Image 1 (cartoon, rainbow, N blue to C red):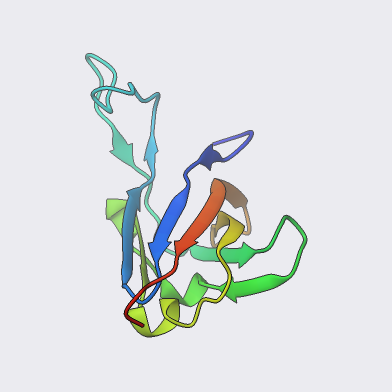
Image 2 (image 1 turned 90 degrees about the vertical axis):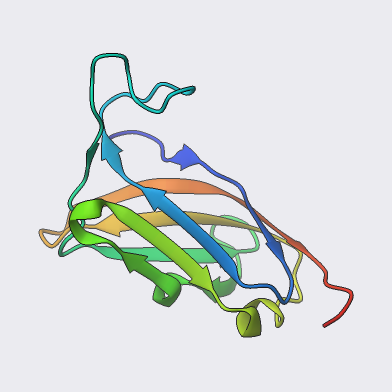
Length: 126
């Protein structure tokens, strides 16, 4: 993948566990079916990769939280699972942020895969 990361905005409800799973695949994607006609999608083997994801007030701004430790990479399946526990999201006292997700191969090639906004909705019960 070259160029800009894909945009994906994240919504979090304060005090609720956030579970998101992405799959990094090769090839051109059809927005409706996910796979071009006559082609199959191939997962990128993430064995040996590391993930870095931070939420900041704005690009280059104050670090609100580094969520890298809440990411699990799925090896040959190409999955990227983000699971931020409720005990963590309940401590969020900020409501808007930005993020990006970098995956770095064992040979040191860094790819900015996703980027976007983070919106936190305040909980009534926590």
